[in-house]
Amino acid sequence: MSNDTVDLKKRAFLTRASQTLGAVAVCGAAVPLVKYLTPGQEAKMSSMPVEFDLTDLSPGDQRTVLWRGKPIWVIRRTLDQVSILDKANPNLSDPNSDIEQQPSYAKNPYRSLRPDILVLVGLCTHLGCAPTFRPEPKAIDEQWPGGFFCSCHGSKFDLAGRVYKGVPAPTNLEVPPYYFKNDQVLVIGAHQP
Image (cartoon, rainbow, N blue to C red; front, side, top):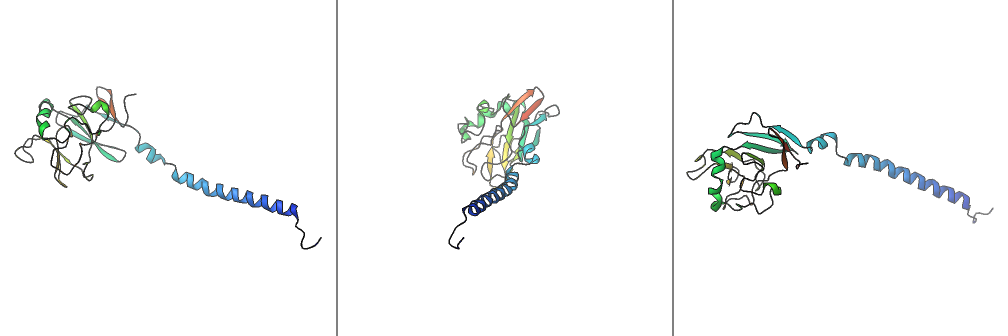
């Protein structure tokens, strides 16, 4: 056999061996990558719906629940608070909730399934600050009927989370998906099954 002769059997063996080792290396690199990109148990749990018991929520009270790492406000409005919602309409940027910041079932004057229970994402739509619940009239100024005030940049929202005209926030507060499991249990993070 001369030096110019190529051993095709040896070449084929080396080619198959290289391809096999390459495939093993790719799989070896892919397994940790896929494991890294797969959400962990904590991430899966944080996106699951959250149940909230309304039993201890009195008229005028607000509670905060975490869902997907965001504060969700649950507020039981009083009859007086519900009755004044229409009065703010001329001063609101989007009184009819035409910009989609809520599920279709909350596109009404109350922005909720039930007039007494309001469920909102507690983050200002301007830069994500946390507004404060200021339900008492005249708490912010003489014309203040009650609502939410973002002290970061002065955005104001009524008691349905609708944004006032002339403030930095561009849209109403977001309404997350939710439904009532029964009269006293609210499920946040899912639509009615």
